[in-house]
Image 1: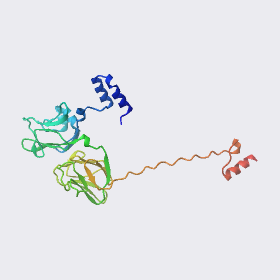
Image 2: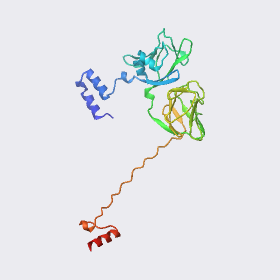
Image 3: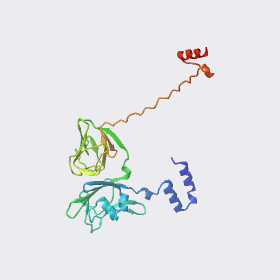
Image 4: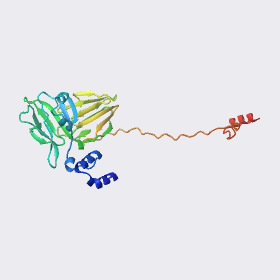
Length: 293
C-alpha cells in the first residue's frame, strides 16, 4: 500500500522537471525505472592464497584500477580485475570481460570464459600461464542473500556433516562444487568442544577468513566455505546463515524474558498523633494507646 506521501508525490510530479523528479526519487526512495531495478549487485567472495575476502562487486568494479586496492586484496602481480558494469537502454548488468593479452585465464565450469553477463552462483577460477589457480571468485546475488542467522544445537559426542546431498546433517545447495556427501565435518566431543575438518579439501574451508584443514573453534569464530557461513557461539550453539540451507538439527531456543511483576505500593502508616490514619497492626495500636494516656 502506498503511503500518503507517495500518493501526494505522484500527484505533484508534474510540477517538477525530469531532473528534479529523479533527485526526489533518489532522496525519498520512490520507485525506480525498469532499468534501475534490473541492476543486481553481488557479494563477491574472493579466495586469494590462504585468505578469503568478501566485498560487494560494485566496490570491486569501482576500485578495479586502484593499485593500493590490489595490494590490499593481495592479488598476484599482473592480475587485472576483469569485472565491469555495463548499461544499455533497458538493462544494467555486471559482466566479466577479459582482454586477449591478459596473463590470467578465466574459467567457468572448467571452460575458458572470455566474456559473460554475471549470474548468481558463478564460480570463476583465474589461472596463471602455468595452469595454477591463483584467484577464485564466487558471486552471490545480493537479492538472494539473507541477513538472518538461525541458531542450532549441536549434539554432544556427535559428528555433523555438511554437503549437497540429502544424506547430510546440514544440506547446503548453493553450488555444484560442493560435494554431495560429507564436504565438511563438525565434531563435538563429550566436553562440548567443537572442531571442524575439511574432508574433501577441494574448495577449502576458512575460519575467520584464513584457510585451514582442521581447527578447534573458539567462541565467535566463523566457519565459511563457498558462501556457507556458521558462527560458533560457545557451548554447543552455532548460528548458520539462512542461505540454501536445510537441516534437522534442533533449533536453539532463546531464554524467555519474563515480565517484571507489578510492584505493590506499601500502605502509609500514621499514628493518631499525626492527626490521621490508624495503626494497622496490634503492636502499633498498643503503642499508640500508650502514648495517648
